[in-house]
Image (cartoon, rainbow, N blue to C red):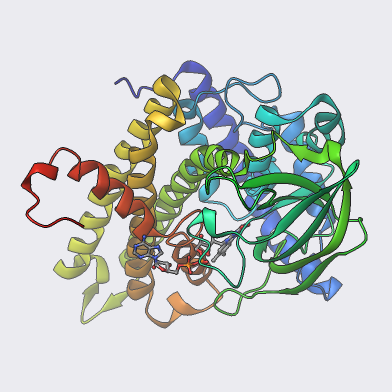
Length: 407
Ligand SMILES: Cc1cc2nc3c(=O)[nH]c(=O)nc-3n(C[C@H](O)[C@H](O)[C@H](O)COP(=O)(O)OP(=O)(O)OC[C@H]3O[C@@H](n4cnc5c(N)ncnc54)[C@H](O)[C@@H]3O)c2cc1C
């Protein structure tokens, strides 16, 4: 395995770092002021459009799409350090059009969309004119098992009729959000992995509504995380994504790259938290010496550095495997890094909060918001336990002969 950065990645990394320092970081207070002035936490502030125009002009656009006619054509390994940098910034992912859930949706569309779907749904996302959401999770079933999804997609002549109650539909409250990729049952009698399909549902279709946004630890911002209803929604049959019964397979395909991107950004968050911890503890003096001179704090700094390096190497390995054997072959490593990166981010940010004292949990510093986001990483795209289960199952393969009791 060779994890050295390519010349192109080195150049892009420098350019991205400059863009974030020169334009994105200074825009954060402007972004917040524009949202506050609108009175709507989901307002799309004009400063974001300015950042997007600048990112495009600098060639820092759609960097996430690997080897594709639509994107920058970077491998996962090449994208990893760029995505990590974006994770250190609140606004950089959206400014560069590398923001979930659009990234996962664009990947799926790039892979499965028909020419009509490319023109209607993918192109406006690629150009940053619109945003989208992914509607899989449902309030009434354990959605960490995708085969539990109950929503119905029923064929009616040249249309499909959708009845679905979803929640945690991220991004649906954004005024830029124009459609959902929705998963539901199209054939209840089929095998449980062939029962579901995915469809593209324009948000201006009658019957689509956002019931409410779900605050996370009291925070409700950006595109929100929404409870959504789809009541007798009729869409043309041409809006079926992939084939009927292919929903589970598309869900699996969507999660591979999406998960690893979460991990890369989580490592970026941990780096930022460690940097803030080091700066702060050099400056604050307690009991006659800088906090940085306390042995316990030094141990926390050292543990954080070690854990970041470990997580980064495992992420690079997962990215390298995705590039060489594909997401399916890298499934276990992707699951492993998803667990490790979520743990890393929550642990390091938590240490940083502690070293900041009361300031750490205030809104004067980004740590509290970062912790809130990092905590959700233990749940989104499959909870930790499901990944652990997959890893354990593979580990146990080959030990069946040791069993003394039949299951
Ligand atoms: C901030 C946020 C954003 C999200 N965005 C989206 C989105 O855009 N679109 C979307 O469709 N969904 C989204 N989700 C939903 C997310 O993917 C689900 O919450 C997650 O898959 C778990 O499903 P569930 O909530 O139904 O939990 P359940 O399936 O009810 O599971 C509950 C708990 O049971 C435990 N558990 C489950 N399986 C096992 C197992 N095999 N072994 C041991 N324990 C287990 C885990 O601790 C798990 O957390 C989002 C969630 C959050 C918090």
